[in-house]
Amino acid sequence: MEMITMQVVLGAFLVLLVHVFNVLVLRPRLLRAKLQRQGIQGPSPHFYFGNIPQIKTIFLEVQSVPSIHVKGKEEDASPSHAWPFTWLVVTDLEILKEIIMYTSLDLGKPTHLAKDLGPLLGHGILTSSGQLWANQRKIIAPELYLNKVKGMVNLIVESTNITLRSWEAKLESEGAALDINVNDDLRSLSADIISRACFGSNYIEGKEIFSRLRDLQKLLSKIHRGIPGFRYVPNKTNRQIWRLEKEINSKISKLVKQRQHETHEQDLLQTILEGAKNCVGSDGLIANSVSCEKFIIDNCKNIFFAGHETTATSASWCLMLLAVHQDCQDRVRAEVLEVCGKDAPNATTLRSLKTLTMVIQESLRLYSPQAHASRTAFKDINLKGIVIPKETNINIPVPILNQDPRLWGPDAHKFNPGRFENGVLGACKVPQLFIPFGIGPRVCVGQHLAMTELKVVLSLILSKFYFSLSPSYCHSPANHLVIEPDHGVVLKMTKI
Image (cartoon, rainbow, N blue to C red):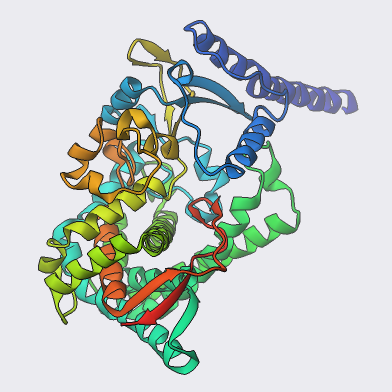
């Protein structure tokens, strides 16, 4: 009996060993070999850490210089290895155009995202692929169409005025000119807006969820993603992550249960609840993989995170640029006062704020919230004559594209909102490669809400305050899952 038990244990160990060898060594080498036979070269990976050490070194080098290095044509596609995944970094314009136009579900989000960022995003619309993603988009997207967003303008104005009154109160009590770190206030403002849009009358409880999501985001941005098994180690950081995930899921479940026993409000939460109910199969699952409860929780977290974090960060970068370029700030303020007068912006007047729109577009170009767009080939696909093997991950470095002279001209590194005078078509030589809200069919469903919120918030700030960059401001963009100012944006503000 003991002999049989030992044989079973030994057999299981050998199976595990073969699996680890296949995942860790064999499969990545086969993928790299297929790419190398087509002339695509890349750095040699470490057995265990892959190319993570080289990637970290490059990040440190980039942070030490004021501009971003743009790859030459000989480096337009190169594979790297972050265990246990093979990444193909692509900057070739023709291949990128084909990726963006690719509508098949065979090119989706990397499967590891739902694992590495599971506590924050789970299998929500930002990380899922295939039929599950298609169901999610079908449910959520209609609630964020432009005609629906127009009805949220008054809500955005109301929330923004609360924040601006707090700034006015500080100026009245502490002096005519005051340094204000706007980053946290804008994040709280954006959280208030998306909470009201998502939760209706329960928006206060929604804001508590945002606070914990922010803490979770900070923790996840610091851990060593890509190192095998690290997320299962019960160290201090992972224990904090697990605790926060449990608290967030519990709070969302509580709100869902409250909604099921209350008068229905037609907001995003109600839309997700009804959509999930309509998509559940006989087995209680959606797309045969995700339970109804998990579907609701994960998509709430996705909307909360994407709906407030990226917009708040974009507003901070935009204010920083306007603080540096006073002449542009004066022009945009003059436009706001001419179009809106003493009234708050509305859905009609927002369309007339052309200069402000150009400033926002240029800010999104120079300081895109996302560091990269990523895809995984779920089967072998052909892109411009290059066969991308199944399971290869494709990485599109957004900041490099956004400052590529081939697309934007010789002043690609400079702040020049005028380049958007004739829209994206006139600004970029390949307009479809301007991707501030994602690429192809997976473009962000909340892009209309984000742009509307940015226009309202910035126009109201400009109509009430003059501002310049404080001497205490430290310019340090950092990737905390979103590219944000690491030390905030400190502005010297005076009331108009």
